[in-house]
Image 1: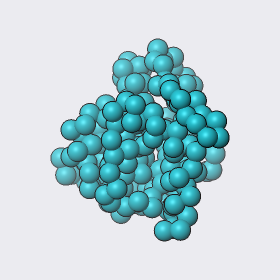
Image 2: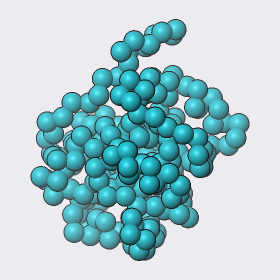
Image 3: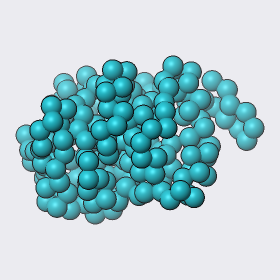
Length: 200
């Protein structure tokens, strides 16, 4: 886990769903928060991961933990919300400053292709399709994402996760464990794959 300068990253401004500008640190001022940084709102994999993380929302709420999704651009937000993929509040980091400060890498036009065709992505894409989750290729295809979990008042970073592949995500139990809460949810079944075939 890389060092995160909460004082620095906390000053970054986000745009709320109502269009107001808020400092990132305001999200952890009064409660612990799970910040899920999406690659894109239209990304099929991101939508599936968002729906997985949302399974924790009742347990998070019961424990006084906020669940927040952050996207790098507004494009696709309306469709994302209408699809009901995420149960927390949503913000946009239009300048991608938080993404940069948290070490979420940007692919190049060359490096994104093997990353997008990798086994992890294919596995989750198969699962997303089985769950009826669709996606599109609108917007910034090169940004990666991750997760940041911060204790109340910005006291400390409980978890900092950086995607290596677009298909990387944390098991739900890792999120619960970082917060010290118990959750009653089961993760969606991932496809079982060997080198040439995936089954559900």
